[in-house]
Length: 302
Image (cartoon, rainbow, N blue to C red; front, side, top):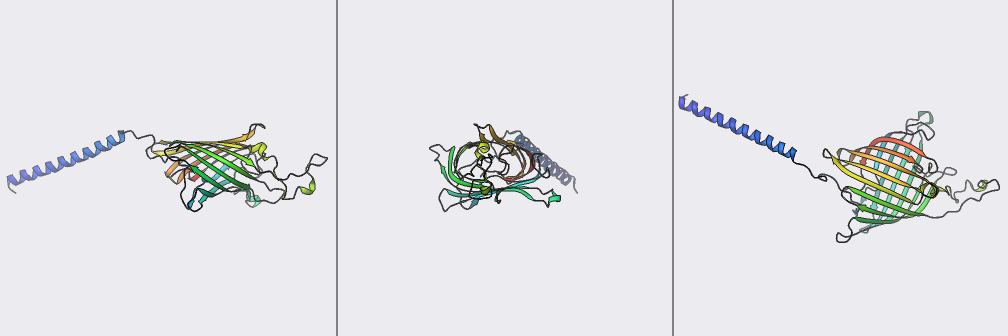
């Protein structure tokens, strides 16, 4: 190879090497600048959206599985599996919906008693959702409906009630506040005998109220608050719920925390409850429970 050709080859190698270094440096600098660029507090955050009028089946209440829970306040094994299923169906193209929620308390680790379902609560409902235009008050949504809640058991273990209710929601991208008020439909109550107890002849009659004092413990209202934020680009939620009867001083409070597991439809989930009304069977007993598991999808998200 001639000297001139050798020098030309060396120059070409130097130019290519310099270009590669410059390109790599540029990419690194761009990545560094990108990392330094602050993200918006709501970037990548799914906003709360109660004004859901999508057709077909959609989520109603949270759906979760708690394979590990602990409470020392009920009979049987201290650890139960608790899970909740829920969906709603829009009727035609109206804002009328059928909703359904089911929560089960399964003593899956209680092998000595054949791993029974200690309690299952069924909650069908019909409601009409009112949304407001952007030019009015878009942050507000109101539901009006009726619902039935039952544990599906025969007397004397049957527990059920029927209600008319209204729920008002106030929503922002990171906050959701709701107030639910209800009226319980009256049912016939067993007569009280001279001994101060219900007459024995009607105790096993399904035509009589099987939990006449449920509102003493569950009250007539329920307040919920949800807060959502991002940490290291992953959404997290805190959910607080409280209900009760101010006149009797009885009620319950719950605290949920969820953390994205890398998908908008899968979240690590922790749940705590203290007070009355965790289930219909325990409406008149104060229960404390802690649970860990998976939330399949959060309520009120796009």
